[in-house]
Image (cartoon, rainbow, N blue to C red):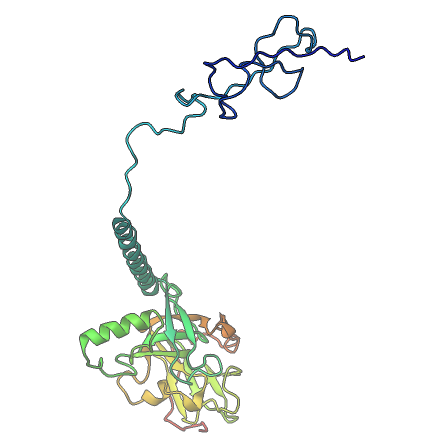
Amino acid sequence: MDTEAQHTERGPSPDAEPDRVSGTGEGPRSARVSGGSGGFAGPELPGASGTSEGAEPFERSEPSEHSEPSERSRPFEHSGDPEPVEDPESAEASDGAPSWRRTVLVGGACVVFLLLLSHFVAQPFLIPSRSMEPTLRVDDRILVNKLAYRFGDEPRRGDVVVFDGTGSFVREEPEGDPVTGLLRDGAAALGLAEPAETDFVKRVVGTGGDRVVCCDEDGRLTVNGTVVVERYLTPGDQPSSVPFDIVVPPDRLWVMGDHRSQSSDSRDHLGSPGGGMVPVDKVVGRADWIAWPFGRWSGVAGTDAFDAVPAPPAGGHPTGPAAPGTGSRG
C-alpha cells in the first residue's frame, strides 16, 4: 500500500502571470517541492505531508525585466574626470628629444673627462715606428704617466720616456693649418692618431753629469766608466754603430732607442743645437703601461742594467769628452 502523501495542486487562474523561468504562460501559481529538490517553492498548503517536519522551503527568484540591478551586479562605473589620453606624437617627441640630447651630453662629458685625464694624469700615445722594439712595437698604445716627475722626482737611467723634441730633435715647430693641428692634437691625446711630429719615445741612458761612452774595446756601452749590459736591445743589434763620448749637461738627458739600428736618437743630433741632449722640462712623462692591443696589455718592463752605475763625481769628470771614435770602436 502506497503510504506517500499526494501533492495537491491548484490549477492556473485566468489572470496568472507567465512563468518567469520558462517564459510560458502555463504553469501552477505555486508548487510544493519535496525537501532539498531544486524546484520552486510556494506557500505551504494545508494538509500537505510531502515535506519533512521543520524543513524550510528553498526559494529562488529571478530579477524582473524592470527591476534595477543590485550593487554587486552593476557594471563598474568610474567616477571623476576621465584620464587624459597622451598623444603618441607628443610622447615620441618628449621621449626622443631628451634621448639624443642625453647621449650627446654624456658623450661630450666623457670626451672632456678623457682630455682632462690625458692632460694632467695619464696620456695615451700611439707608437708609430720600430725604434723601441722589442720593448714597444708599432701600433702599441702606451699610457704615459704624467705624474711620475711632477712632484720633484726626475727621470732616471733606464726609464722609457716621452718628450717634446722641439729645440733638441726638431729645430722649430712645424707649420700647418691650426684647425687641423688642433683636431690632430685632440685625437693624439686620446691615442687615436699618431703623436705630433715633435713627440718622441726613447730610453734614458744618461742623466745630468753622466759620461756616456760607446763603445769600449769589447763594443759595449759604458756610463761613468761602468759597463752597461743592455738586455733590452733588439737581438743582433750593436749598442751603437756611431762612436761617441759625451758628458751630459745638468738638467739634460741622453736618450737612445732599444732598436739601435732603426732609431734616430741623441746620436743623430750630436751636431744640432743642444748636441742631442733633451731638457728635463721637455719630458711629458714616463711610459708605464701598454694598453693596446689586449694581447700585450702589461706594464712597460723595467731594467736593472744601470743598477751598478755610480753617480757622477761631485766636481764633474776630470777630463772632457773624447773626440768621436777616440778610444772607442763603432
